[in-house]
Image: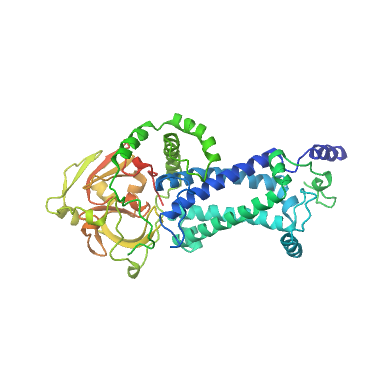
Amino acid sequence: MTQAVSVKSTIRHHHKLHPAALRAMHWINATAIIMMIGSGWKIYNDEVLFGWLHFPEWIVLGTDAQWGLQWHFFAMWILMFNGLCYLAYGIITGRFRRKLFPIRPREVIADIYGALRFNLAHDDIRHYNAVQKLLYTGIILVIVVQVISGWVIYKPIQFSEFTALLGGFQAGRLIHFIGMAAIVAFMIVHVLLALLVPKTIVAMVAGGPDEPEDDNAIPANAPARG
Amino acid sequence: MPPRSPSSSIFRPKTGVDQTAFEENKRLAADIDRRNILRGTLSLGAISMLTGCSPTDSDAVRSFLKAFSTVNDRVQEAIFRPNHLAPTYREDQVVKPPRFNAFYDVDEVKPVDGATWKLDVAGLVQNKSPWSADQIYKLPEQEMIVRHICVEGWDYIGQWSGVNLRQFLERIGADLKAKYVAFRCADNYTECLDMATALHPQTILATKYAREPITDPFGFPLRLRTATKLGFKNAKWVTAIEVTNTFPGTYWSERGFNWFAGI
């Protein structure tokens, strides 16, 4: 038993902050999300929710309505399958539990204050601050809701139970739009903060520093399995 | 019902239908096969790096997207619930008149003469005699108040009545195991339903709107109305119905829209 634990620790010692599978999923997700947003803007333009808002043609994906739709209905599969892999990975490897939890409101407030004064510590990018934990958890939930509202708009009759739950077809469209806006807002903050601490970008490309043994070790008081 | 926004409709091109694009797309439609998915995928890698810059109009990309659209057809067929009813609404929610949409403007509608109109029946059916408007209007009526959802994103509640399509198909001795029920229209529009949708309880050949005969812009004397498809699948001014196992092509799928177009 002792030997088994020590072997496990040795393997984990060589894990980088962002293992290759996670990096691949991150960049596939980024590509799919950008395709979804660009084609979604094209689809939105055909029947706008807000009279003051049309997305300029040079920024949208798809040169006619049908190609915007077809891009959207292609990229959605990449987003969904990649997203399911990511969720399974995060849960099975314990990465979500290690990296994203717990999120303590007091720390979030302190870190927001620190972030606004550009006074957050980044010495160890392996350790997410409370704002990062909140944003990363939040964006996962937003994308999950976005997929659900997307299916409701795509198949409002086949999934009429969900359509009713969201408040109808047009409510589904509005929720889908708000979800898009939240994702765009996240991307702006995410990219800006990454640019401010460039080693985080290097880490998402090359893997970053090795994970410490301690963080990965199973806590001594963890209940024994089986 | 006035449009909610000033955005132009793709169903109303300002310069009329571009026939060259049609010819080009016909060639592309014929071109679709498994190899195109692979060929398209090769250029997709490059294109996805450029997203946001509208690099989408190359033939290879369109060809790939149209080929992939058939994957989405299969998925929609798989998730289609043949006996799941679309929500229905109260009579006071009905919008009068319904909202017009076609691939041309409402003032370009060419009314159909009900006295000389006839419905041709073709393909895998036992009784191929054509139907007059009188005969059609005497068939038992089914009324439904359902939501019309356009691919553009707008919707309205409409009240339609006419003969149930399954009952009509049974009446003419159609092969209900065939794959498609195709429609041809007075304005040369073409549409085609999968058999499962044709047999859905809320698919009718509509003759009335809000209990009055359908008016010219909305398909007099006969139009298709199904509660489980996007608006453009609901062919107006129907002049022929064909039951077939050969996919006949449809106006909008030839132009790149998804064929199944279920909701």
